Length: 341
Ligand code: SF4
Image 1 (cartoon, helix red, strand yellow):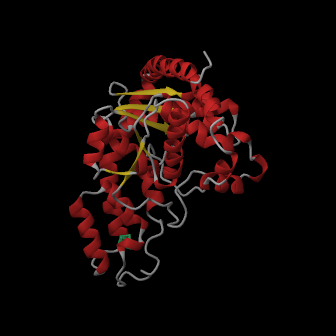
Image 2 (cartoon, protein in one colour):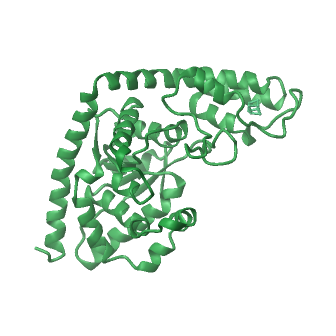
Image 3 (cartoon, helix red, strand yellow):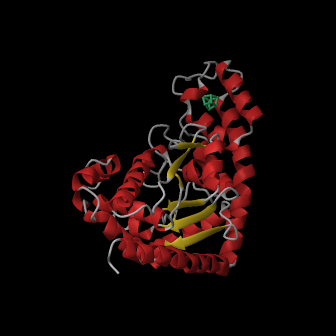
């Protein structure tokens, strides 16, 4: 497992072969937790790797969903990610189901995967606890499809959050197993995990930021709407009166500052909070100001992309075209290696 952005030596090593793969959930409502935890790291990696991003609709349908809005979700996720910095001139973005080799490689990997191993995956156990009525085979097989996503492009780097590290370990094991069973072919990809900053929580300061819990700030929300959400957001709960000193390490607002505000502002927060020199509203106003420095240009780009839908269409068409060629080449090798052709 590598860390970002402080893992330059390991990253440089991978750079020589240089393919990075990451999946993007087709969510119609990308929030600042997604931006701070994933997208801004991907943007930093565009110069270091040949980056491939897949809108993972096959993964998304393992949870209950409305087919009539799936295409809108795919489009909105693509648009928001391009607006946030995934420049389609510098990377490939495509829709997973437009490259059928993902499921073909999954089937071959299924034959190398012990059932018990999938049943023990932490994310499967958590998801099946949450969706008791829909524990489908797709949910169970999710890590195998994820391994196929990565290895189909013979990617060597996969930027992930802590919760996905187990799946990348699984992918490495699967690559090793394939190479031992047949012949050396797949690289063992590295998980690139952001090293800096705690994970942003929802505005309740307790749970993960998510649309379903209604505790989120959307990446493309208007400044006034963001302030209306930020103003009552939970802070360090021990700081009851303005005169009470607080602890930024126990406050989600400070975690968000770490994503959006420059170091000198973060220092101002730490000093002011611990000495009770600033109030929480002062702190949030300053945060809002710095959030807007980052989010205003993203929102403007998103509006421009809405006016020019051909940019998203062309990005997805080019991504699918190029990924089909790469995927077909891998599958031709895999069929030969496994004796299927
Ligand atoms: S001053 Fe800022 S960091 Fe401190 S408790 Fe208030 S909002 Fe949180």
